[in-house]
Image (cartoon, rainbow, N blue to C red):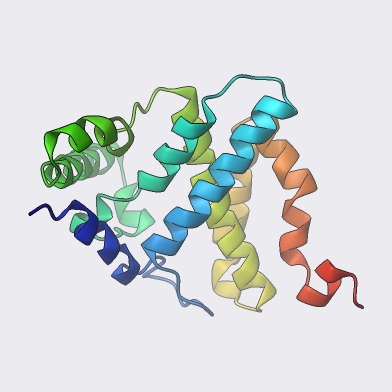
Length: 194
């Protein structure tokens, strides 16, 4: 019996943004799906519009599995996770161990196929696209909360927006300019039913 997928299914019980009051709670499973969709968009924009050559499948799979270690570690709040370099390094080790433990719950042929995505090559361009999508997902959450009148997310929105712009990724800039405004619209406005 292998428990890898049963553990991943538990991502739906792990709450994100635990230190902040949210108008709508978000779990790690839905976040991972959103990051995978956004990573796919960034990789396609990068390939089709910016004329680069990212491996789109690899980008999406990095995004899909980027939080899987959290089924064992939980979602550590950002102020703690990034408190200093020592804390970042220690938490990175914990995440790697949790990922390794998850991979041990697979038969060897599947372990060999999934380990490149669960234990991502953090220096690869595709991983950088996936991490940009992760940050973009956090920014969209902030936009949604601010739109709902939740000032709790104002500073996070400003900070994340600055981080996104500092990445200097043309595909990310394209997404933000052409797709992000839609996230501020109501359903009627998106459908043109005003």
